[in-house]
Length: 171
Image 1 (cartoon, rainbow, N blue to C red):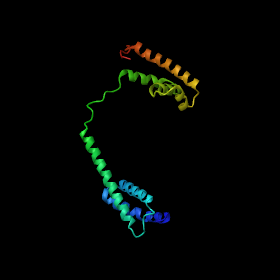
Image 2: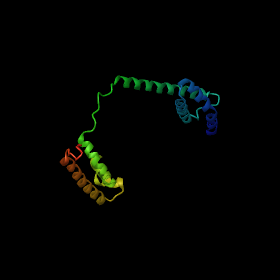
Image 3: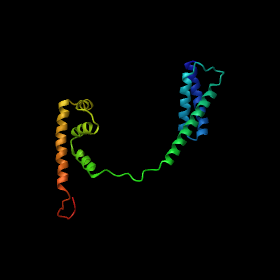
Image 4: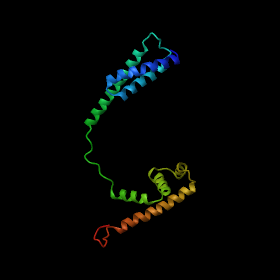
């Protein structure tokens, strides 16, 4: 089967096969996906297809098998999910984490990015410079200024502790 013959075959057979697989799967998107995948597999074998060898039957068979395989895979996944109970409870972030995130949010964006990439993503200064497009010296300055500002903000949070305002609320 030539490329032109395959294209013509695809144009006429795809809607018909999609309708048939839609009736089989009950999901139009899934039907389109498996028929498309079957056509992709057929494309690699188009030289072997003869006009009288029922290529549509071959594609339908492949698409049906793909649909069944996907259904089995989904069923196995669902069984696994049902057998695995969800965790009892997931603890929220601790106060240190919350304070760090709050302090990071107050930093300028360039300093925050340098701090996060270097200290949380474990990138070297050179890698941070490469990712941000800034010179190495600039990254070093941003890290230094950002760390100093973080230290000041985090030390200020610890030193303040709960303070009573005039209104009687805890700050």
